Length: 325
Image 1 (cartoon, rainbow, N blue to C red):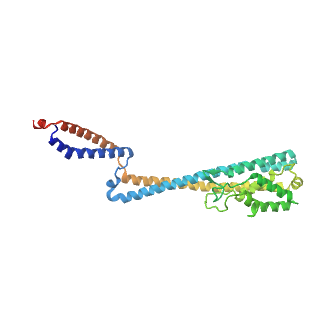
Image 2 (image 1 turned 30 degrees about the vertical axis):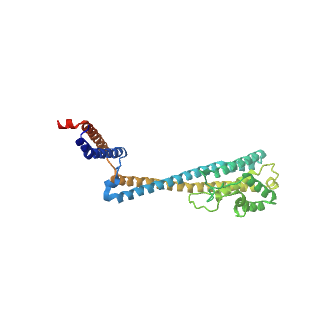
Image 3 (image 1 turned 90 degrees about the vertical axis):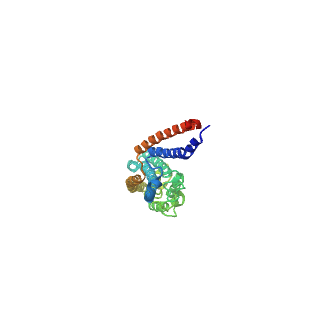
């Protein structure tokens, strides 16, 4: 039977020693991989407050970076959709002026069809969203910003039919698009007039509204439209050409302003990168563990544990008779 002397040695000396080495081996193994102290509190002692401040600053930087990343993504999507809007109308004013100069009904029919196609693309682009958030609805981010294009064209067509002359048509059209009580605000634009997000662009922006206004007039001006005013006068279409060109210019300015915001976000992200590097170095100075040193300790602990297990095994095999010999 095992010696009571060996049992005493095992329980009072080797047992706690082996347990301690196991615990330390587990910690050192992690430190050799992570390069961080396993027990920062014990290592830092009175400097733990500094480490906590540094860690809080790093956590704050991570949050700020996530927010900046979200802003950058939304800005990029908005910029892309506005580019689609601008591309959709590109060259159409020149095409219209050429058709008016030639008095070619087929050319006029083609430009009217092109204008309607442009509007379809513009409405689709402005109704774009990022995730569950509509980007061009102001604060009403859960609402589609633009309603039915068909309704818009029907409204503009009716205004043209009812107008006895160019001046009346121009006035009624301006009221429709720019008066808060007009059809655009009451029926077509379904977003919010409030924009609390400084990065946001609304589908109700004057540049976008003016572009859509010009395109809508061209779209209803088919030679066989049955609208007397548009059959007898070119003034409404000339005004529409101006609105398209002016809207495109203002849209370019709008996109440039958005581009400046994108640059600011990018610069802020670069600043955060620098701050993170500095804070990480400061935090690592307090909490880092040399991985080579930790790996060396792991090897030493493994060797010591192996020796302890071997010694334990030999002592366990001793009998009282063997011990007395």
